[in-house]
Image (cartoon, helix red, strand yellow):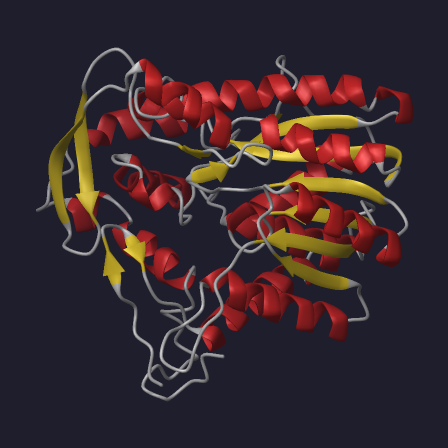
Length: 389
């Protein structure tokens, strides 16, 4: 079957298996071109099928020689309908890592459930005995409570007052003004339930109680702060409350695993094109401008460059972990440089539908978005039939 990108409301509904495999290979090739990392060797990634979780898995496997076990919930394909990109990513990664002599398996299941945790722990014992790192990188809009079954839904809204700013429709190339009504109190708590640190802590507790954590165990979760431009809808909005909870949870986890000299950190990463960021109003336009400025300054990074730099320079650097005053790892250090943000502020008001192509790097944004789903690679003939199973 010939598969084409089908985009609706900032979400791509299709994925190309050959393209997803090529994207994985390109990230592997990047990591293999860099110096080796003396890092984790037995790694569990919860949410390792796309984005930061996937790039973390690739960085540790091919940079540090780690065996990896991934847990994520992805839909399989049929003869007429593609699977999710994460499904193809998991399959491609596991095949390529095993071919390189590495342990690599993926569990396709609801990562929020106690049953999945039990299944994962059993597999850890069989594959590794114990793990020395947990990367927690789930990015789901909903979360079922593992005890009650109640379904919590997150929302991306400002707090206190309506937020109005420019945004872009990447497919149409149009810049318009959008307004987002503020959240009410009933929407904040569910967002924290979904995107905060509660499930991260449940995973660590289950793993520790099962005695599958090595001495010196480390765990990571990912966050974003961003500039004043996006602050109202992100860090000072409902999602910001969830990220505050995530950061507080990191400190709780560190105390919880202190008897095995364990540590937990939140890494604040750079704004990048992910399946999550693409649906946040204002953010795609900001990212398009940011990319142009950071490329001009020679400091642009994609997802794999970010994750490799984190493990090689911030965590496994031969010294102590590089953190800020709040105990966070800062991978947004180049994005938030004064000279970068000064240029963002200087150019923001000049962006219109007519100046979009010249004043931003909207083409890279669109290209990165398509490649998340296996599309847009020159090496692939997308007119050919492909097996979706």
